[in-house]
Image (cartoon, rainbow, N blue to C red; front, side):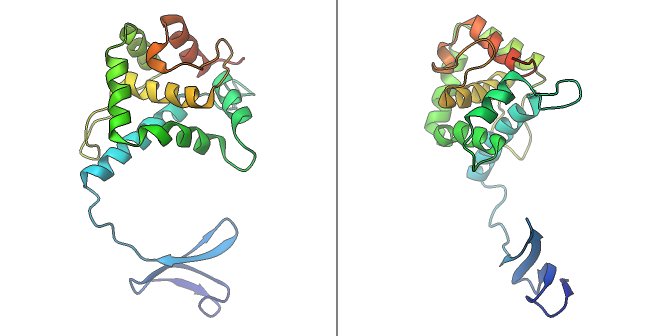
Length: 193
């Protein structure tokens, strides 16, 4: 049931109205949109997108943002904020750059195979686990995404942005990174420049 303040559509309303429209207050605006029922939330394509978004979200959660312990945020956070255009939010820009190329299954599979076949696979695994990444599994995902693949997706976004961290410039494809670069990248998640 919609809550209405003054006549409908004239001041403010929030909630569902007759399974046809939804009213809500967003960023200082009264907004109305069509009421939508997902056709199949368990569809394989939806699960694939959900797991890629979750992987990028885990990268954001692993980054140290400004807090009492680290007032300016981590080196990677600072580099992302500096690289983000003025009209965008840093975390959305990071996810966008990471998923622009990886949203297609072929490109995602290619990165996954490149990381799995890299000489530095053990380093990817150790650094991902040190940052607290866990394997993404469950009914809401199409497949499991390993911790090292999640970290590699963050590395791919940094590569796309040509980020300069505290210790390195991430300008090469992540599967070509040597052990020291992977360690530097993981360090940039939690330390200041």
